[in-house]
Image (cartoon, rainbow, N blue to C red; front, side, top):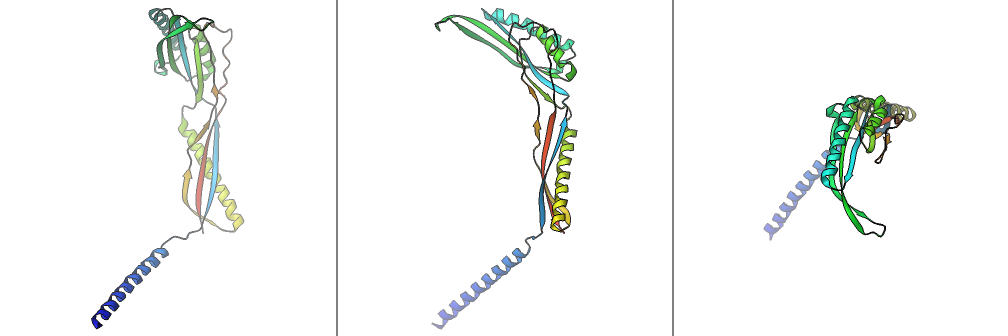
Length: 243
């Protein structure tokens, strides 16, 4: 009986030591948690620039009673279009085939009954225009050369890196100004930067949805195209330590 009592007391004593050690470890761990005070602010930076490059889809749409005739007509027009674009200063590397389709098209009468089938060929090139001053004239030239499907003009910046760097810097500086203002109001002194979180940049850019159907001749004046501005924006969240 005495042995059982002594064994029970021994087990309880060991358990108490283990619990005591665990409690000490938790106390030491809690003591290492940083309690540094900080100020968190958000800033934004925007840079507006005039685009210096444009992209446009220019295509040739042909239709004939048989596929061979449709393809031959389309090939001829597409070749003339490519040569005309090159004559306007567009380099071969900036002319890329974006779409080529050949498909039958059923014709219907007023009663909705099929009356025949024709064949359609579409050939579209994606053109990079680096001289925006010549963009309107280029569109006229394309139409004169046989293009009858023009759409999706978009504008961009050739060198984005410098513009992105400016917008990012403005966002961080804006956050710094706000942090200094908050610190002054609170009567504290800003310390070092603890963290910086910069968002993905956003772009606000013009889109010119110019479109044209078939059977259109050359215009007497160049197509008026306005590139507008592209606005690049960054948001930044910065944490400052309080001294």
